[in-house]
Every structure is written in structure tokens, then in C-alpha cells.
Amino acid sequence: MALRKIELLRRCGGHISVVAESLHADVQALLDAGAIDLIAGPYTPELLAEVSLVVAATDDQELNRRAAADCRARRIPVNVVDDPEACSFITPSIVDRSPVLIAISSGGSAPVLARTLRTQLESDIPASYGRLAELAAAYRPRVKTAIPQMSQRRHFWESVFDGAVAEHMFAGRRDLAEEALEAKLADIEAGREVLPGGEVYLVGGGPGDPDLLTFRALRLMQKADVVLYDRLVSREVLDLVRRDAEHINVGKRRSDHTVPQEDINQLLVRLAKEGKRVLRLKGGDPFIFGRGGEEIETLAAAGVPFQVVPGITAASGCAAYAGIPLTHRDHAQSCRFVTGHQKDGELDLNWQELAAPNQTVVFYMGRLSLPIICEQLMAHGLPADYPIALVEEGTRPTQKVICGTLADINGKLDPEEAPRATLVIVGTVVRLRDKLDWFRGKEEV
Ligand code: SAH
View 1: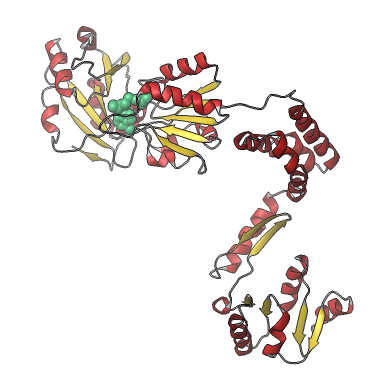
View 2: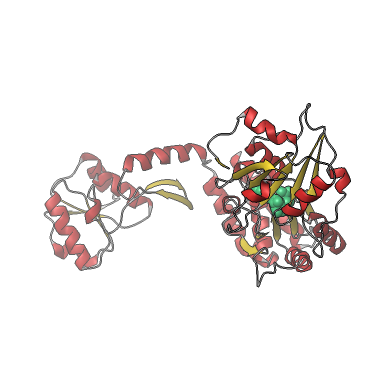
């Protein structure tokens, strides 16, 4: 035990004295080699006068504890082997890629588990990580001067650790790694390379279930410096955004007004111009009733680069999770996505077309307009018993599906209930839900 601790401490460069009446052969060898000192004889508290750290590693628990108590009284950090309670510090399992050091501790509860984890990390992390960190350390001051802005500096280092420099290092070619880093930095210093500026990622976050994100969405979410999100983005999806990113809620109802669209557009431009990677995270798909078009128009006009990442729109997500196919050979040869949002108190839609047979009509933002929708569809020829379904908070654990007819659906709603994101699906495909019986376990009315 003592030997292991000695080896650990030696690596940190401390001056080590061993207090012992007799020595293990390997410890004796260290003594002979001049690596440690020996204080031959029994332990006494007086020995603590000049030390800055103590490890009690005898096989006498009572003695160990006494030594630990003496240390505590003198405020000297003490570790007692195999006795976590008596320790004022512990020595975790470590993966040593100095100067990079990973410490794993189970807080004394399962040291073997910590060691198992260490073995996994040992094989996952290239030995040259340490040398890569040393190289970075040598260049840090210069990079700081050449790239004063912090977010840009972070992007620079990311490209170093993720690109050719790191690859050369992992291949054992420090010379090439240094050359590549030198060239990159010289370009920046001479103004030949324009630093990567800000960018906007317009990302569809899907209807709520985080499993419905695309890989690309997730990748960009983890790169963002700042995220602007609104009400429809679920907590679980938001949790996957890079932790350190600044979070701005632009959907918060301030005295019943969300942040005006024009302000959001301007904010996107401003943040990107500060050199930031701006994530504009939207519910569903950004181009389906998401005002994504308006946002990129402003970005394009301001010369800010952007990417658009599609998401699963509420209609697809809700239909799949509610067991309602949006099209079907025998029922619907087309599917329409329509907004139920009223403008100046009116819902100006082509009802004649929406009431045509053999199609599915999906209303977004249709909850408040539901009475008008049902009334108009019946007035334009659909029968009173025509099927309709509401999917509330689709794809989330709180999803609720309410099925009915144009005549009776309004009566099935609880007027007291706080409004939830609701999708309205009108069409005979709704009837397939019972037949297909895909869907169990979710609450249903
Ligand atoms: N861009 C989004 C739609 C934004 S409009 C998309 O592609 O899904 C907002 C409307 O979307 C809500 O009023 C509601 O009708 C619908 N919606 C979004 N997420 C929903 C969900 N999880 N469950 C039910 N409806 C949802």
C-alpha cells in the first residue's frame, strides 16, 4: 500500500520521507536509489512538524487513526489507506496524460468501479493528448494576442484540437503538428486568414421528444455559443444544447407579448456580428409556420451566414405518435397543412377547398379557432359525423389525443384546462386509429 502511494507522490515531485521500523524490499530499493528518505523508528506526532501532506498506510488501523487525528489538529491533509472516513482527502483513480489529468472517484463507495471506468478511458484517450496540451500551452500567449476575442479564440482552438494539428500529434509527428499550428497562426497574424465569424443555425427542434432530433441538429446544438428558443421547444430538447451556451428565451410571455419578430431578427444579426455561433432553435420545422423565412431574409440582407436544419414538424410527429396516418390509399390522397391562427379576429381560409373529400387537413394553431373550423367545414359540405382528432403536446410524455366528430368535438374539451400546444387533424384517416390500435398507454378521451 505504502509503495503504491509513494509512486503516486513521486510523480508529483514531492520530497518523501517514510516513517517505518522495517521496510518492504521495493521501498528499500527506492531508499537505496536515493528517491526517498527514511525516518527509522515508531511514529510520533513530533514528526509532523515539517510536513505538508501525510499518508497513513500501516496495517494498524488504530495507529493510522491516531496519526490522522494528529494531522487534523495541525491542519495537515491526511489520507488513510482503506479508511475513507478518516481521510481529509482521497486519491482518486487517475488517467494521466499530463498536463491533462482525469480523476475518477466514487467517493469511497466503489473504488473498483472507478478503476474499471479508468481502464475504459485509458484505452479511449490517445497517449499523445498530453503532448497536444503541451503544444497548446506553448502557443497560448501568442494566440491570445493574435485573437483577442474570446469566442473566436475558442473556435480557433477547436479547429486545432479537431483538425490537422491534432492528427499529426496523434500520429507522433510533433514537428508536423507544430508546423501546421505555426502556419495557421502566422496567417491570422498577417491578416491573411479571416477568422471564422459568427453564423446562425436555424434549427428545427421537432415536436418535443428529443429522440426526434436530427444528428445535424444535435451537432450544431452542441457547438452554439448562444441559443434563442421559444415556448414550443421542450425542456428535454433544450437540455441537449451546449451547457455553457447563453440561453435567451424569446418566447417568454411578457405582459402577454412574446418578443416581437423584428427584434428577434435584429438580435440574431447582432449576436452573429459579434462573432458568435447563434442557435435559433424552433419547435418542429423552421419553415413550417415557424417564421424561419423572415429570419433568414434579415440575415441574408445583413450578410450573415446561416444554415437551416429541418425538423420533424408537429403534423408528422403528432400523427405518428397518435397512430393516425396522414395519407392512406383508401382515405386521403393529399394532406394539407393550414394555419388556424386568426388575423384581426378572422380566419380567412378557402373553406370550399378544405371541405373537399379524400384529403387530410391539419390545422396548426387551431385550438382557439376550433369552433369556427368545425362550423365552416360543415357549412361547406362535410357531414356532422366527420372525424376529427386533437393531439395535445404530441410526442411528449404528456401527450393527449381527443377524437370526435365535427359536431361533438368542442363539447369534449374542458374549458377550464390551461391551453396546451394542440394540433387539429380532420379526415377519415382519424378512424384508422381505432382499427390499427398501434397506440397503447397514452391517455385518451
Ligand atoms: N414550426 C412548428 C409549428 C409552429 S406553429 C412545426 O413545424 O411544428 C405552432 C403550432 O404548432 C401550435 O399551435 C400547435 O398547433 C403546433 N404544435 C407544435 N408542437 C406541437 C406538439 N408537440 N403537439 C401538438 N401541436 C404542436
